[in-house]
Image (spheres, helix red, strand yellow):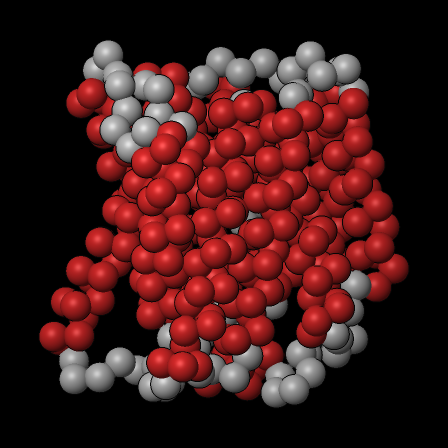
Length: 322
């Protein structure tokens, strides 16, 4: 089945899918900043924050789903038996749990700018490699050069300043988050190729899986944070639940089901760009010369992936095998 055919089957146009991903990527860029403010204002840890984010997102998305169900007798997506949907929901939920929790751990450990750049800079590289191995999406010479550039950028980012502002543990959490993000993106694209995946259903129940998985760990870490200003901390948490979670993930899963995996990874680079700007301008994080150089190398590498994909698409390489 070709990309165009899968797009038609899903009921969502490519243009709308791209728009959804742009909005999601921009919204995600503010999640790390809000998380950094929560960490500064309270003793909440990354696991507890991820739990509340997903539990709140589940409640909101499920409520929206109920409202939509009352307005129409059946969903537009093709009905899929539970036994077929369950593996998708569990796999996506587990990947989402690792992705979010490891990302918040990276932000807490090494700061918003570096944590986000490592996560979302390594993600496209892993996605490009994974898409080539699992779905036959061609990487090409330009893609290989881009992957090498991303790895070089990561080395400069980690080793360039001797760890003065970049903590290896934070980079490790970022790489783990990137691997989970790549897995989630590839699974979403794989299951969306035949148009049978209901993105709203997967999103809602994936958040339920994440909440169940993280609840015992969050209880050990501490579910209720201690803060000097609880109201302010609560506002930050509410923002994280609504905008970069319920809204952004609903748009992401819908868009990722109809857009090529490499394209998804490029568009969502809006997240590290906006996060870096917020980190410097609003949170006062300092960027060293090696950090800036490493960041530019990683972003240039992913831009190279986009250029390579454009060339392949023009040669007919954008089609996804059946």
